[in-house]
Length: 101
Image 1: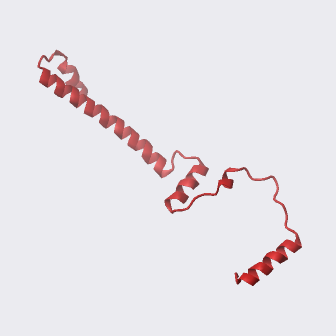
Image 2: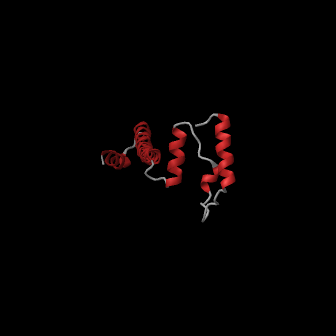
Image 3: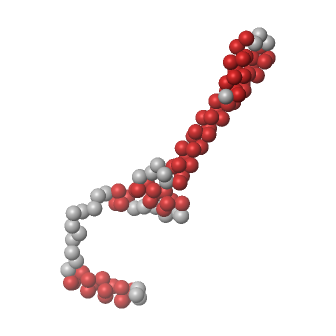
């Protein structure tokens, strides 16, 4: 690495100004490497590579301005309760009364 070679070559440097400049360069390079690593990580999160399915759904909904209901985090029941004929008739009447097709 070019920066590493420069830093090692500067061990014998006696000029304080040059040493300060070399330290600043080394610090800038370390910051650059750290930022690139974090950028890769954030891009992976943004694209959904590192998200579990529930978080991926939440992120997708958030992008389009929606939110996932809190009950979506709860496990599904083993069986769903069945509606009675009266409940179906009541729902149909309410839809007909409200004008919903």
